[in-house]
Image (tube, rainbow, N blue to C red; front, side, top):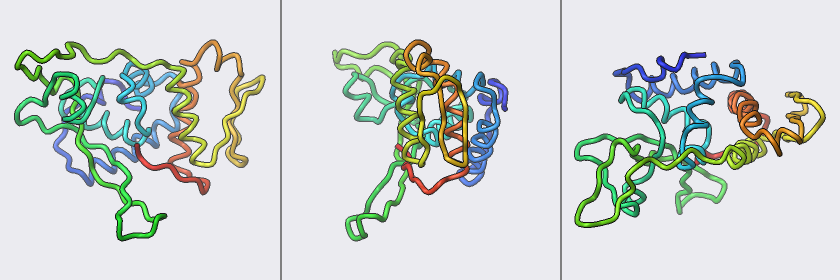
Length: 212
């Protein structure tokens, strides 16, 4: 598992190599302990980051590392405008992948296209007397984050079920987590689900989940 400092190292690698690094990071994350740097970064992030797919989250962490940014709060140009901010001139922003269904294709054909986001530190007040957001949004609710991770696993064909013990059975596939943890320790649930979701993305069971 890469150390936290590794995630912030600058790099000149281009998009093809970045995709390879995303895959490699997912592989490392699937083998990581629940307490790992990526989980720590995502737990500290705002809902604007936590509500994305894990694949997009990893891609964003790597892009932020290339630009030596800490990843806290990201939005579109229009999203920042609603908060009285705008991207700084010349700042490249960060890319996520969004599902796109071309109008001339069948309904079940899904393509993906890059969509641009900017981290809070890449923006500035819009000026003109408009009320502006002055700090990145606070970290999201870990209970909501855990539920979002569960939904991603569900779309990949995994069932997350309460039980007396924590366990994983990839053949089923089912993940069991004590119900008391869901109620009293959602951070522990997040820490458990993130590596399992990374594994599920690398080893699909027939389900499907679009980047979001």
